[in-house]
Image (cartoon, rainbow, N blue to C red; front, top):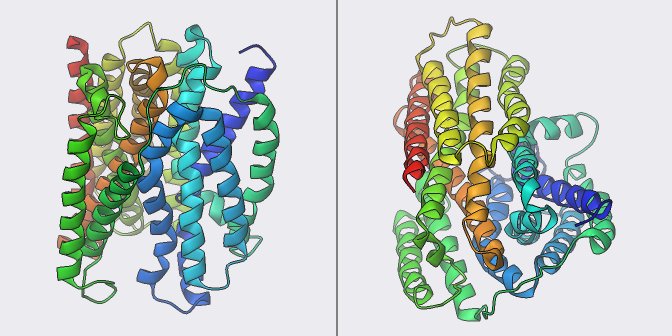
Length: 453
């Protein structure tokens, strides 16, 4: 794509994916305020977050497949329009059920933007610059994924909670205006049909499993739970049954909605395993660190927030460097080194005594962030380029699904650890960080295995 159209297209892609990822965690800090204003329990208020994540999980892969068929530009801009309208509705929501419902719609729009993100990056950049483009995109995703609470704190310090959603409206309108002119359409499109039955099975699989696991982890039938244990198990079993039927159908399709056929490409499959394990480790650390700093280490909220900013700052600094190494150094080696550094940083944090100095903590967090930045861009590049060009949408959708699955697995693992060793007793955060280090080691092993391919 020639300049200056490429520059505008890249800006639209980066702002869009940053906004979609940011909104996944932006509301977390406002949950106590929402629970108080709508006079509901914290267990009910958290559905403002869950509804968004549930929508993304349910339709991400069908929309990626639809992008391969109809064009990535069309899916991206439609998702942006839905996201913008839903954001306006969220800002005007009169009750929690309305807010959760509109957050679900907002998640549908975000899924449209996420599903074809990497496919658009591949369409915009020439092959020689693709590594750099994916590195910049990965840097934005990694930064916005952990910046939600900080951005929310800045907004809530000067405005009420509806502005957390209202600020998306002018940005979304700008994206639609510039995107219509700047974004390219797909040159090649997959010759497949997205069948309604496959979409329904995809929604049932991810939706029922999400609901069942969430109900079990949050304590079904107990205080704060929202379902009886029998119903939670039934939801989980129903999701697994639908998933079995869904997978069996997809295995017989030439270009499936759930692109399991891409997993036959060994390099693609190993890169997906690397991604899921690494993002699981990242979420375990993100959940554990606040409890560690505010609990055993006895630090205040402000100091804990400053310490946690070291991770994304290191990722931002290393990601462009990692992008320049793509094509020169094998991605399996870059990922192995980065994830090894990440495991070392988290393992050291888990072993530090409560009296450890801030210098030691900063050094460990910088090591974690730098290692994550060294892994992410080359890994995403391998996922996209190891798939055929006309399957870029499916490959990008699988990459986003791997990130979300890793984050969900990490959150569930942290909840399981904390249920056995409550953070108030002091041991839980250390064990959770140790588990995160082990997951990073597993991710590094998957990455190094790619050197044999």
